[in-house]
Image (tube, rainbow, N blue to C red; front, side, top):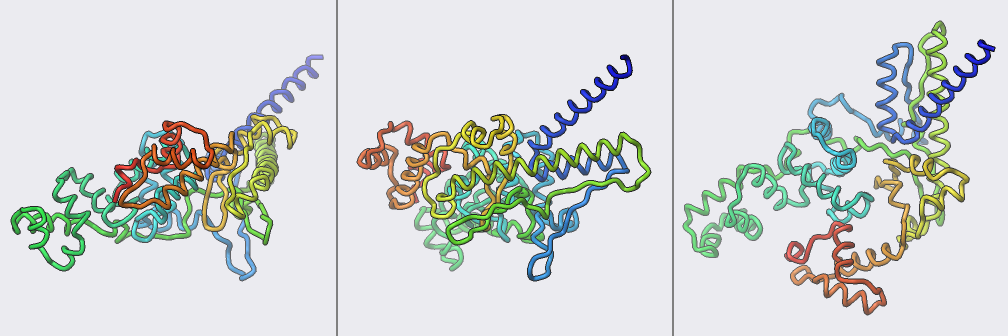
Length: 403
């Protein structure tokens, strides 16, 4: 009796540990899973982590989202990521920072405008703004700018220079600076040529290309997509990012039962993670296929609906989509973006986006004017709702949008 009782207790404990391990691994994105397994291999020298190399039709190694990490000492991305690692910030903010760093071009500027990045990321507006503000404080100063003027203004802010005349010259007289037409700059502001020259010297001390001197590898991705989506005429093909899925094995055959059991549990947990993620991802993305293929409005889709259709628990679906990323064309997006609690709000946001994209930049529309246009299209909402949705889209107020 005592032996059977002990065996049952050990079995129950083992199952409990394995269930916890499986739950924890399901919540991890690929980068977190890689880090976790690397730590396991450090703690236990008998465990080895392996990354498969997929070969494409051109007989070259497939795109590796961790390419060159730690191999190039002057990588801009590595330099920025290292600074982020020292910051005591929320996990969501860190994810957005990595997303933004991942979208820097060869100059160190953001490849896309703020609105596009915000709407594509799926992150909350307040988290997105917080991450963008932090990015603008990282060295080299000026990274994360949207254009040249923005880049120079970020540098002035970090240098503690808040001179309204200098900012005005930056915003209005770059052509005159290039042509050395200092007299015009002086006359426009009724200031002396000596003052103009002092301002010009400050501007010349700034770096128009903050990434200069750093290695910028556009294939380096610190946010690793879990799923790859390809278009196939009027359909989409959804696959796991197999080339980045880590596998583990024992280095030697002569190991303890404990090590063998740990590897088996890890293998089963990883396998279950992949199976669940693919199942959930396929359902969600196929459900929102019209948005992916034709940019139609995202349809209402709740976690409980996904769970019911797939016969899973809601908590399982929540863990499966948590911090998971997908690659569509050349974009990396969050899987959670495709979970929509109410598509009415998505339709209204899309209308607001179209209205603002087509507005006169010199005379942008107020929230009241946007509301009037929405009411004419039978969208019955309030002005404060317009402001809320505009902010969630990452669109600035009328004053800040005015050129």
